[in-house]
Amino acid sequence: MTEEGDFLEGEEGALRVAVAARAAARQLAVVPSEKKSEILRMVADGIDESHAAILEANRADVRAARTTFKENLLAPSAFERLELDEGKIRSMAAGVRAVAALPDPSGRVLSRTLLDDGLVLEKVTCPLGVLLVIFESRPDAVTQIGSLALKSGNAAILKGGRESARSTAALLDVFTKAFASFPEIPAAALSSVADRAGVDALLALDEHIDLVIPRGGYDLVRHVQATTRIPVLGHAEGICHVYVDRAADEAMATAIVLDSKRQYPAACNTMETLLFHREAAERFLVPLLNRLLEAGVEIRACAKTRALAPSLATTPATEEDWRTEYGGLILSVRLVESLDEAVEHVNRHGSHHTEAIVTGDKAAAEAFLGRVDAAGVFHNASTRFADGFRYGFGAEVGISTSRIHARGPVGLDGLVTYKYLLRGSGQIVATYSGEDARPFRHRTLP
Image (tube, rainbow, N blue to C red):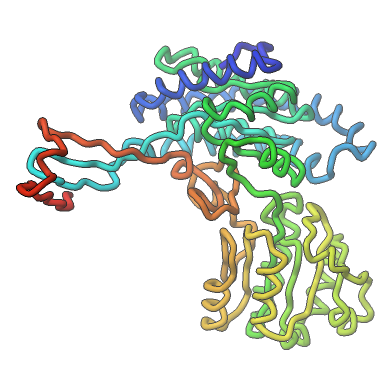
């Protein structure tokens, strides 16, 4: 960890921190699992003990950000994610303890194969190496990333947004103090950069950094993807749908829709478009929309929806609404005539993040689950369940909509790869070639 205030800037500083992180990652790879868990438990205790200082730093960030927010320089969703309270700090500490209690994902033997007598091949999980994580607002990203990186044996370089700089520093200080008690943990296991130039310089260091994880809005993710040759894990948008099928129960659908939109409107797993089968709409669309309106949600509805609910204060939806992540209390609503139409809409306009169907028809549910292309597809459950902590991962470094390596909320398993370990007793390839070649046994071992 860099010392307090020791933020590295520019190309030279970026190279220095990346090289140090690579060395730290190699040391971390052989730290025993129980030692890593012990450190994380100390970090969790430190979060509890430092809650007053963390809240004070966060209040300073929030005061400064209010001006930025009023000047429309900070998105409402980003502002909402910035603010901490006692409950969020307790949740951060609980998340770190949950990660400490999880099995170590590194060093697991995935398979063993007997190639020949005295020649055994093992496929074993190992850390990715060095992570660069760029996040906007959300100070809780520090504890999530720090704990997951340490537990999986990876070094992490963090770049938080300017709006959360004080909160980020206060949380990093907790890790610094915990690391100081464990000489086997290198200081550079968790480091940070402060300026934008430092980030751009790090994005060019593909020989030192193994994975970039951007956690923020569309512009940030697209900038990172366009700037670096390093693999990028993340998602640019969270355009999530709830489809209320013809066989949906009214009370269940109402609860799921309200939770998917209202529970935390700024989250990337919040519902942005509600699809309603006509038969269900004729039964309870109007009272459900009225509940949303009473809850302060602005409704942008298709022509069929508005015709069915002419007395409600809705505005016409445009094509742009179907592909917009609002990040707030706005919802687009479309009436569909069939499950096929709902699936087609989701696959065309969704961001492959999280989609849900509400129905009592098992066949319809299975068709939706199988045909919808997304990292998470749910039946009779809120889209808000798409979260590493709720999935039992302890925390998450982010959510990926990629089909490669890791998909959905990414926890410990998404931060390891594997390598092959071959243990022999003097064998050479020439023995297994030519007319008198010795045959391989290729037998799977327990």
